[in-house]
Length: 447
Image 1 (cartoon, rainbow, N blue to C red):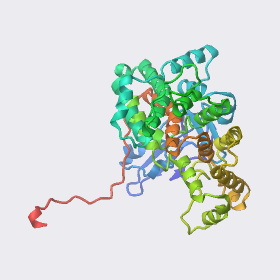
Image 2: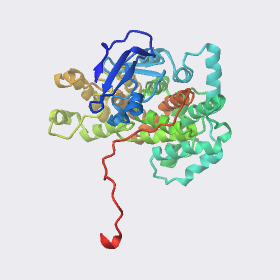
Image 3: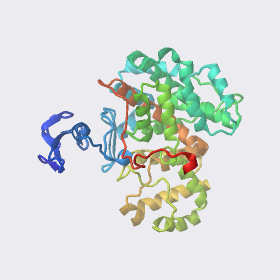
Image 4: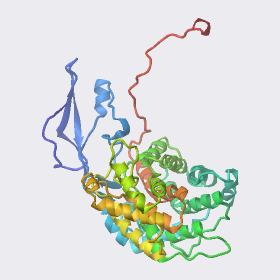
């Protein structure tokens, strides 16, 4: 593989430049194919490899898609080396400080921050459609009482298409918008009901007078016989968690939503598939793993032992919530939630909780210990979100559910972008087949 000219980031953005190509030569036949280099607004350029199969009859192999751009997108940008996360060009730090989750939802869906009137209309739509069909509520009784809330989420979100099938034409922009509004507005209600059902408590209806995060916490923590007052600092912390998890480029669950949606499956089915992918402990279960680790350590006096285990390359123990696959520097979301976590602990008077004391001690060690600093194993967003959710009193089996509530707007925005692309095609990854070569069937009596 050779470059026809040095790779750089100049020239018109997003256009394959004829003078910027990579040439591949087949030494057996002497044939060559030129692959255009395409530059985006930011980040590394990409090589368009579609000509490799067309001209050479060969596929490219990239397990896990670590070096492959699966799509074009204008929604989220990440630079893991520099610790950058932007939604539609806006730095996550600015959005977390100055915006709200519903405003971020509008931004992700429509590409621009809303005007005052547009935001008022959007907020009204989301707020007025938080209830779910009563028969859908009754469907919860079909699940075992001890079912994991994520298992219920997968089923109920997929079942939305059976109750809201009046707007499922994926080729109709208005239908896509209506389905997106329904998902964003109803997902907190579905999530809270999944938890209530799993613990045997009655469902709590949404309240139109409450904000998005406060309404979710009220449905999750209140009971019909006693109204629960949600402190503003707790609602703000939850709103920040929602903002910081709203989208994260082409991760496993988002890619799943795109792939499922590429078959023209309805958006409820596609998002249900994304919830299933998020449920995996290597993806959405990381903050739950943080709490399990803290429980295993148990006491501040045992931290030294576990730090030594984490440093020992021959010990399988891992400190959960430290470092990140994408961010090779500090996770920008963690920097925001770190302050929120300390505010929540102070608000709730939980600074002396044994488990949270372990977490705070681990945090101070990771930020100062040379081993962690040199390896850039800083606390990540899962570490702090786990602390916040635990302090609020949310059980660990709901952590991934809350992640799903946050990420629904990202999934549906990515789905809308994909469906509206000109020349949209169904996703069809290829493979390197390494099974048996052709062979003839042998009768069972002769084997």
